[in-house]
Image 1 (tube, rainbow, N blue to C red):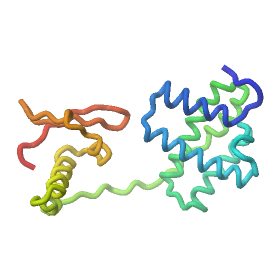
Image 2 (cartoon, helix red, strand yellow; image 1 turned 90 degrees about the vertical axis):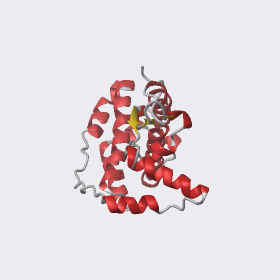
Image 3 (spheres, rainbow, N blue to C red; image 1 turned 30 degrees about the horizontal axis):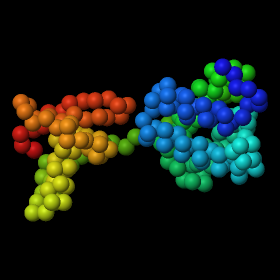
Amino acid sequence: MSTAGPLTLPSLAERFFLDRLMNQLQASPRTVAAYRDTFRLLLAFAHKRLGKRPAELRLTDLDAAFVLAFLKHLEDDRHNAVRSRNARLAAIRSFMHFVAFQEPAAVGLTQRVLAIPMKRFERSLVGYLTRAQIETVLAAPDETTWIGRRDRMMLTILYNTGARVSELIGLRRVDLTLDPTACVKILGKGRKERVVPLWRKR
């Protein structure tokens, strides 16, 4: 369905966030927030570079040359790592995929932006703690206090299940099962659930 009137960025961005991300994809709040932050940076850069307020921007302002300049700004001026630069580009590419279906007349512009490659980067090896180091970490909280017992429990669950911190803080009491087999239900990225058995001993 084509938008009425000129190709304004605000109308397309509104549809992208409300219709595409929230209603169709039911993206997580974290994903929506990451995309929102990308657009905040993009709009601020457009205001500085083009002298236009967000309401004045047209889709044609976001051509490949502009997006490349924005990515260079992220790395050179904001000192973003390549991983962060790629995450911002991924958000822009997702928007352009959406726009290609909303505005067929802009397919040339969207394809040129979509052709911008992700930057390759070296992935560092994941380090690890020895068993003795793990024991030291788990023994650090003061179990004579409520906060210490809480911290000990949280550290033990992280070690026991391999959960992310964000997954840990999202746990509810109903997610824990003690009988007949102790386990915990964890809601991970992409709303994927997994049930992890708990060890009798750490």
